[in-house]
Every structure is written in C-alpha cells, then in structure tokens.
Image (cartoon, rainbow, N blue to C red; front, side, top):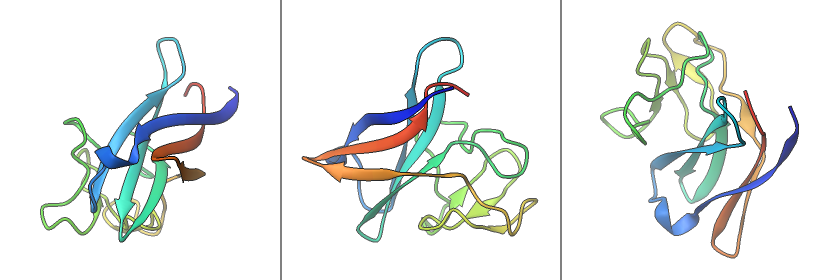
Length: 117
C-alpha cells in the first residue's frame, strides 16, 4: 500500500461548511477519503469512522449533521469536529478520524493518501 499525493477535486466544487468524498487508487478496494471545507480551511480525512471503520456516509457527499456544525457517521451516530476530526459524541467519543495531509494549489485540492485500503 503506497502513499502518494493525489489531485482529488477542484476547490470551487466544495462550498464552505461542506464535505465531499473522493476515491483514489485502482482495483476493487480504492481508498476512500473526505475533503472538508470548514471556516475557510480545507481538511482531509480517511472516510472511516473511528468506531468500527465504516464509511461515515450512506448517501453521496452527506457528511454533516442537520445543523451543519459537525460531521456525522450515519452507521452508529458518532459526531466529529470538522476542523480536527475529534469524536465529540457517540460510540467512539474521544477518538478521531484519521487526518490526511492536504493542500490547495492552483484551485485544486491535493491529498496524500494510500492507493488502496
């Protein structure tokens, strides 16, 4: 499992207080991640809940709670801070999402991630 930098999405496709899933790598088990735009900054995480490792979303790009203040794992209700990935409520309280290095350049979001699970 090699880690490399991937160009995952255009920054303009990600509104403030929004998140989008990306998949990178080849084969049957590509790596799934999330890019979050929160308070003017971009953050990236593995799309894997700190509780049991399930993806946070069931529906495409549906990651935020109804009030738009936290990320939500729809499988078991864990709630995470968008800026840190810290679980603040639910079965993995005190745990965290796995942060990925990210950067923005020339209007694109780049993320360092493995090429498979």
